[in-house]
View 1 (tube, rainbow, N blue to C red):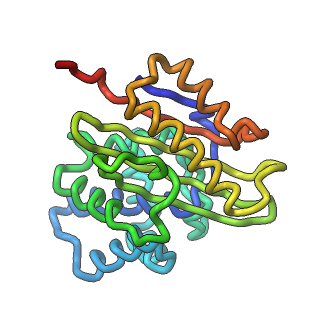
View 2 (tube, rainbow, N blue to C red):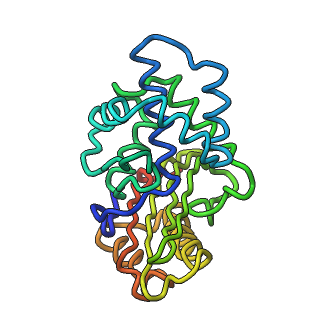
Length: 247
């Protein structure tokens, strides 16, 4: 079951595009049959765990637009538009496509092999403390999260995004929440609070097996405290847990 709220609306990616860069890098090495160099491993670690912008620029430039677009094509991420002239943070993303990326990282597929998936998820599970916010809010103690966040200020306000995958005993799910400024969203913390309000709502419902249908879930997401306050630009996609077994 999926819950979608404005799933195909475009947002500036900010740093969540780094998860795409990482996946494209891993796919490129799969195709060439070569391992990541020590330099690439160092840059990748900085890019994902610390959201280092210089490392992202280095790997973006190394891959080039053709390789990045090739990955998007393979992934079926047709709604994603790469940022031009090196402006990777202005890549246009949708919650729909971010969920496709997260699915590639969590389930067997023909684009990323098991080693590649495990490598990226390991980095996303080991972000530094100041990167461990967003969709991780409300995660139960028995659930492991893997996260990538992004934030970008411009003349219109703050753009705050968070994507993550979650796994635990009998639990596998993904959350993507993207936001941009509205009249109410005039600072970074407001955007973070909005995402974390949504995350806590979803985490609570998923882990208590309360979501019974996508329409009900979408309505509850739209009514989250900050989303309800003119947050029509927010979007979230959540694949729910399988029906739990009893006994």
